[in-house]
Length: 128
Image (cartoon, rainbow, N blue to C red; front, side):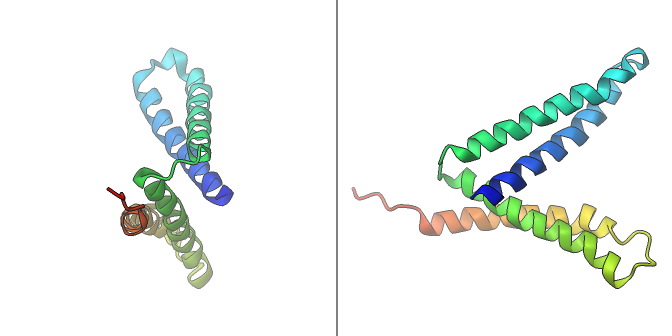
């Protein structure tokens, strides 16, 4: 389970860092340009810490299964789509974009759906 916590925390860090960089660069004036990167880094660390703590609590609900499935399959899809074109067609300069824009997000969505299906099939039955 620690591997899933690491993948999920790193994923939360990267996603929040990218979005906060984008949003802060649009929202802050040019005079505060130097504050964009530190503020986005603090936000990203806070998100990663929150995900790390949340996954460590031992909750085993449907959201936990969805996050675990999304972290595992999203990482596999991203790595396969990013590294695969580098190995098989190194002369293609846009090969890694496959992992960034197609296989990574697709693996994330499929992993979340698969995690939900897995949880619903294995959930504890109410003895009422």
